[in-house]
Image (cartoon, rainbow, N blue to C red; front, side, top):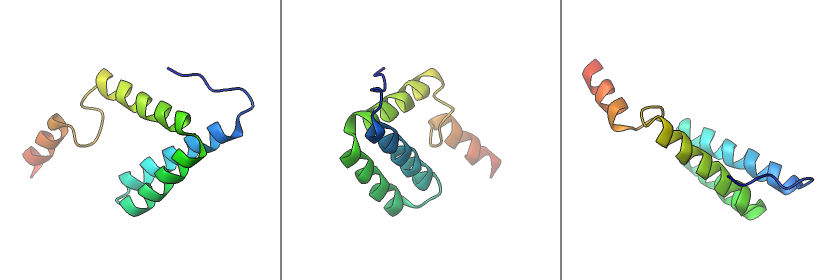
Length: 80
């Protein structure tokens, strides 16, 4: 995993924007998510890639912990 460069404000801002983009997607607002994701990439692409890498690591650690996994979808269907 990449490490945060010291005193790099663009890194922090890009991570915040990327995380806000994820929140927007989760709340069902893909247009806002896309806008924030693009802004994050323009600010510091390495920081955004680190957020993506962390998500991938989390998904691989517990594939049922994220929305949209096959197991989660199956649980939702059983509840109907």
